[in-house]
Length: 447
View 1 (cartoon, rainbow, N blue to C red):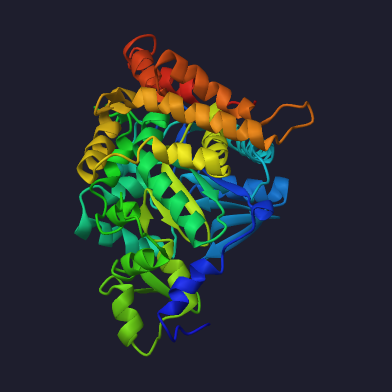
View 2 (cartoon, helix red, strand yellow):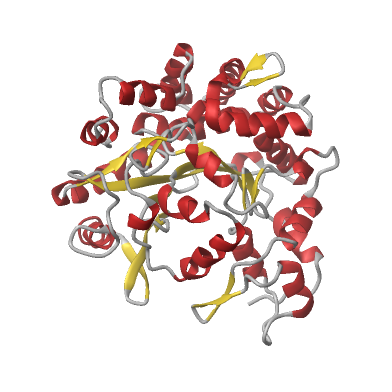
C-alpha cells in the first residue's frame, strides 16, 4: 500500500488520470430492481429464488467469475465487465469503457439476455423503474456485503432516508474521461449545472410502497435526506476558479465509512479523511488506496474519481438505458457542445439552482426557472447532444451514428413528457393501480 506523505498526492491522484481525446471512453453503470413476478415484492438475496441463485446460474451458464465475502457471492467479473450488488439486491452491470454507444448498447443487450434467461424460470423479473414499486423498506433483505454493515447503521444517524436510498433505488450512470484539470472542471461544473434538467428528462420513480408518492423522481428526493455531507449539489463547483484542490478539500472533510485491511472492513465513521490523514488510526496510516475507496463513498450529483461520473438519473426501461450515455457523450465530448450545455444553466444563482433542483424531483419537466420550463431546456440539451454525436460520427455496421440511441428520448420530449409522466397516467388509467399490470408493463423483456 502507498502511504500518503503529502496532501499534494491527493491532487495528483486526479491530475495523473488525464487522457488525450483519442483515449476517451464512456462507461455506463446500469442498476435494476428485481421482483417476484407473482407478488411484485423485492426478491431476497438468499434462497432458491434469490439473487445468489441468479449469480450462480450466471457463473455456470455464461462464464462469469465470482467474488465472495464470508462464503457468499457479492460480485461477478468477466473480461472488462463486472456485476455488482446494491444493498437491497439491485443488480448492476458495470460496463466496460466503450469507444462508442454502439458498444454500450451491445453490452447491455447481452447482459439483459443472460439475466432474463436465468431469472425468468425462477419467476423473477426486472423492472425498468428507478425504485422498488411495492416492497417497503423493512421487507427488503440486505445483501451480505461487509461495507453495508458499516453504512447501514451510519445512515440512520445522518438522515431519514439513507436506507431507502440503499435498498430501494436504482440508477443509470454515465462515466467519462477528461484531458486535464481545466477540462475536468468544465465537465464537473456542467454536470452539476445540468443535474435538474437530467433529473427531469429521465424521472422514473413515481410509485413506491405500492402507491403514487407525489414525485416524478422520488429516488432523487430520497437523496435530499440521505446524508447532506456527501450528496446533492456542491456550491464550489460553480466557482470561476474551481479546481481539483476544491474537490480534495471537500472530500477531506467528509466523514469516512471504512478502510480495508486484509480484506476486513474497519469502521471509520467517527472521523473525516482529513483527521485520518493527520493522525492515523490504531497504527494505520492513510494510503492512496484508502483515498480511492473514500472517493467512492461520496455521492454528489457529479462525482470526480479517476474519471467524471454523472449520477442524476433514475434507472430506465431498456430502450432508454443507453440514452443517458449517448446524451452525455454528445454534450461532453465536443468542446462547442460542452460550452453550449453550460450556457443553458450558467446564469442561474445558487438559490435558483437549489430551488430548481428540488422542484425537478417533484415536477420534472414542468418545473420552471425564471421564464423557462425544464422541458424547453431539455429539448435544447437534446439538440446539443444530437449535434455532438452527429459531429463525432461513430457509425455502426448499418451506417447509423449514435443519435439512434437518443430517438426514444426525443419521442418523449416531443410529447412533453418524462417516463414518470407516462407511468402516472397509466397507473391511474389502464393499469388501474394493479401491481400485476404494473409488472407486465414495466418488466424487462428480451429485445
